[in-house]
Figure 1: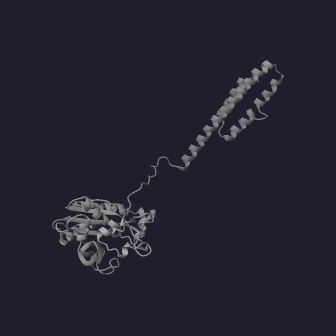
Figure 2: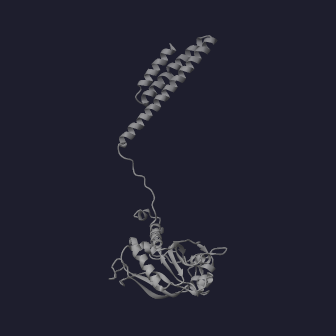
Figure 3: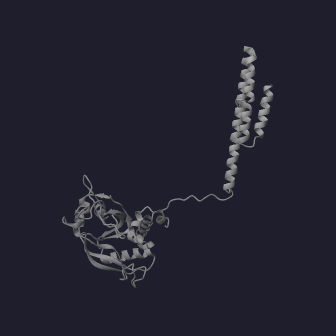
Length: 339
């Protein structure tokens, strides 16, 4: 049989094949154990050695060509099937699905807003280390050796680290660190993470955020603090705010006071959010204690100032009406995607 004729005939049949089943039939017809190529190989047994060599080479080349054509056609059919299947399932004229991107955490959003308001009031934003020593966290802030906060985890609220050091319990250590290296007048805020060994519940966490504030000059008074904090609260909540100062005690300030603002939900009438008092507690503050100035190498005869601390978590909860502080670190995307 003419091998060229076999080649042309096989090529035509392969080109006309419509599916894998047709190709399987063609493979068996030409390359199967009872196929045309196998039959032609059996015929060369009767030929001379020279003719066997030449005819065998031509048959092997023909076999290879048919195999290659079958493979190409099969790949082509597969591509057509994929296209048909995808075209059937997907409308390629539709716009692509919007890629979901990340966004800022609610605590980060509020921290940036707090920084922006204070910067308009002339305050600089500074940071300090989260791993502290007892000098900056307690001693320099006039906290006595027998103060309950100094006790270790089992008795107090401080996380001590192996090899020395502790996780800061407030952002106040940055006050002293900053005053050591910078001369008054000073206006700074210190947003950052703090740690306390608290029993966690809807309003307490072992890890939360504070914003510390410090203003030092030759003639700073409680009246200055009241004006600054009221301006901040009104700028942050974008409404008129009434505040009040209640006497309190903090080792690093004297006099000391708690800062309350009228409830933004009931406008001072009394509701569950403010425990029907009409007031919301915002944080602690006071005039910087003379001993703190001395520990920072500043003379309290020449300088005076105020310091305050607020919870960024609490500000965030108030802004977004969140009733459980634990949600901030839950990793629950259903919660986080709301902001």
